[in-house]
Image 1: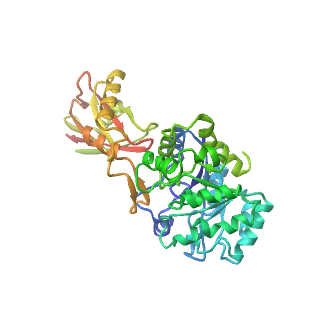
Image 2: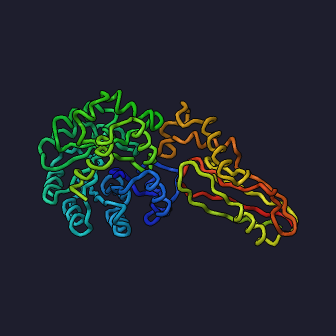
Image 3: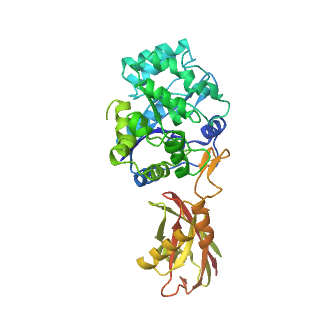
Length: 281
Length: 142
């Protein structure tokens, strides 16, 4: 079984609406896709052997005037299907009430982590407004998911998600687990460097832009990285993520299986590291 | 008279043959059409309609033939990020298999029933599942 740590639930029927979709289409950069009932969602998850998915909302209050799935919507999905989903919260760090919004999500909505998108939300991870958010994540032992590397969202300058722009924030908050998404592609080596230096730094493998899933994952694990780097040095810091709905999760797992990893490494990548990152079940 | 019905199926595998013969027969009999034609059409580009004998061995041979003709790991052009979708196109195998098998079939309707040959079954042919799929059944006649 696997845990998918990077899922955007935009197409889930309980939160999909034509009005919201027009906003998401513009701000998330997507189209031509329709809503999915939960039986269809679960059919795909079951086929891929995915036991749980981490749902990521995104607060764009000050940059775009809306949300790409709200904290309450994600909490509602988790409440309906607690065995299948883990919900994160998001907060726009530039809004004046950001700490209050985040603490409310942790305490009242049961959010298990914080989802941030520096490029789309237009902030640096080292900005002063981030300090209270780090303090709350440490206080409640909640990890961060930080969108890094290439982002397909429009109006999202990539410089904010460069691993080197995030390093100091990770370095100065060693007690907060921080995942930089998508292997921070194309800065894979910089991502590897951060993980070598900082044990609280994680990544996930939804980096699929130029080739088939098999070609992309093979290149990531054997060319962008040395073919033994994951097993030798990064075994406990790389997680499985799909970036759903941009990529289909079961095809990425199929591509990971094609790597021929030993069982212990496959299990660590697909499940154990996510449990550690999330702080348990 | 023309009667159009929309049927929905949730597939559970990436490649799967779902027998829909009884559903097609039922729609014809409920249509009120006594003499005419029935068309069965997939609403998709990676999911087709097949008519063949409903035996597991034939189903297996069909699937294996298609896999040999359109292998998963061929260097397809349709394997890259599609900005208009905001998603990666990585289902060329499904598109090509559907093109080979087609997306529709037709049968005569007589005496208020679909006239299928004794060995004929109708399949929804999933090539990029699991997904919810739509099949249109249109009965035309008098």
